[in-house]
Image 1: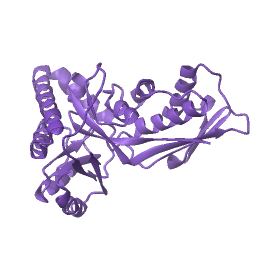
Image 2: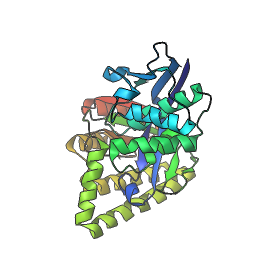
Image 3: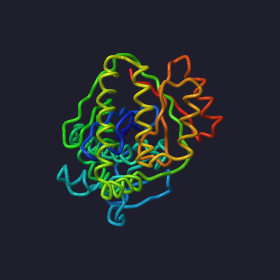
Length: 307
């Protein structure tokens, strides 16, 4: 048996604007992951995939428009081998449609496990390109940031069409993530922002440039370890995301609760209109912010750090 996993991700700065050429910063969340297990099949049905979290079982021949089947097909095409008899089980701890990159993580775990089991493990760059093709099924016009962070497993500065830049942090960063419990597919919010941009290009591009400027400033502040500046930039990014109309009552409730409990800054993370928010905290305020989010109605609260 061959097992592989891939982490969730959070976007720290730049969501939505990244689709239009602006930089974004994102980081992996290793406390939440997707896992794939591959073993030799015994029934001669080719590749059979068991997606236990959604109680779904299928073969490639019968799975039209299925992201996991598409991932497996792309792996076989990439490795240039005929379909073998494999029995694959895929599981995920990552909530669906919550802005944590669940689709990319599941595809990455599957592709890593398959390619390794077949004796040709894919390097991160090739794995990322493959997962990006699958992401088009989830998001329509993906930015490429989910597959990049998930496949490289490192914090990255991402600009569409350029090689991702991994970066170091000047001081440990501690984050509290609050899940609204509201599912919000990224495809929907990305599509709505695109329609807004098509109708009001000058205004939207002004917002995108402002978000990009914040991301560049945050990149510098993170490398220098200036945590208070990072928090202020997160708050400014959230204000611009409100202008794009991708926040929600549930997100604002959790963001305000985190700030009132002492977070240095807080914003939505991902597509918005649901899903998750992220708050930057000093380590001595982490417990208080977690408690405040739970009182404010978060469906789930967890912590992660970038060292």
